Picture 1: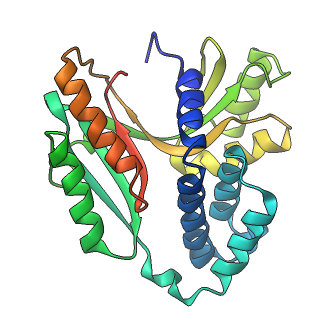
Picture 2 (picture 1 turned 180 degrees about the vertical axis):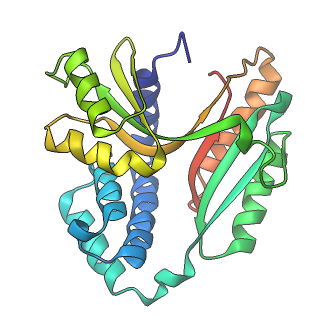
Length: 242
């Protein structure tokens, strides 16, 4: 994504999300429920839960909120009602969009996602219609200002831990991993005391598409805003070069 600062985008996303902190905490709370359901409430024996806790801390979720979420999830008989569903589709000018949802009501979520695409002059496609344009990767972002380690030392630490790739941006370092190695690499960096601004398994576009038509940009933004505001939506990925 040359010409774009990944960290500036993340900071912008976080600032935007500060106004929607309740939504972010809801998303992470549901991820805690699923992680506890799948691997138990003890982070020491549940790498997925450790990853969610790291994500929670990166989003400034208070420790007592995290602990309450884990306890509640451990005793929540309704945890079984949540399921992951991914939708794929197209925005204006063929922009590829992937929507990850975690829902207890498939019909409601499907209707809302479809409506968001339609209102932005796009359409939901069939499973697999755009996901081949993305690579699933573990992504760790380190803010240069927060990191005392040199670029070379950080790169060697990350690669030795099992990372696939290391990129230096203007204001941050980006570490990419195979999704299966993400937990191991993240925990190694955490144990080394390296501050991480963002840690997640994400979908990275293989190529980006620029939009110049104002009407298309407005339509796409409408779809993305509607999806972001939906409590069932966990993540939205797209290949628009903002």
